[in-house]
Image 1 (tube, rainbow, N blue to C red):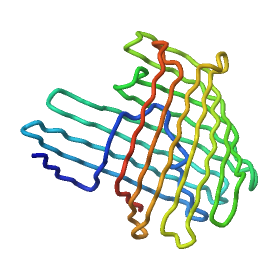
Image 2: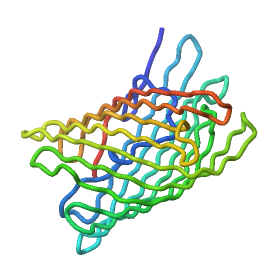
Image 3: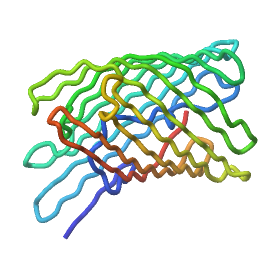
Image 4: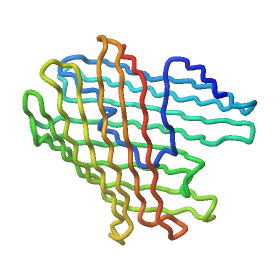
Length: 252
């Protein structure tokens, strides 16, 4: 008989994370608050006829704005572990820092630095640095939309292929958000497209849908669905992953 003891959060189901991560849902959209900190933590233990599986998931996001509200500093980190008697079924981490400068109501300049690891993917580790422009193309009372385009330089490490690749990529994203009139829920959908400059047939796509339902000013329920596709891995194969995550979030 399957028994589950849940501490803080239930994730259902949990699959391999893609190496392409949606930063849009990590941005903390506040008008005047200069400092914001969000944290999501989860632990799940199950035992099925003596076969024990432990799941650990933690995410922290913090954002700081300058006094004139034109400069934004964003940092986020994530760690996921699924451990069984046979060994780790998943082990991944992600770190990202970003600077955003607001020119006017329409355009913003961005620069970012990122590192990530996932033992289940062909590209186990990826480090990158980049920068570009961000445009707020929808600014309505309940709808917001962003379009961004950046250059990024990345280094990919693949133990399976025995290779290290140095790539120049373009990164384009489109994001649309909706906040209900009653503030009872919000929806964000984001699509990323990242082709190689030297070979446009080598590209990645990330689609993410997120639903947030606040239960209090500091507490919420959320659902996230991710789909990731890589048209050409270092093994010259295609790769895709999907993930559905349901859980609880805390805001400080």
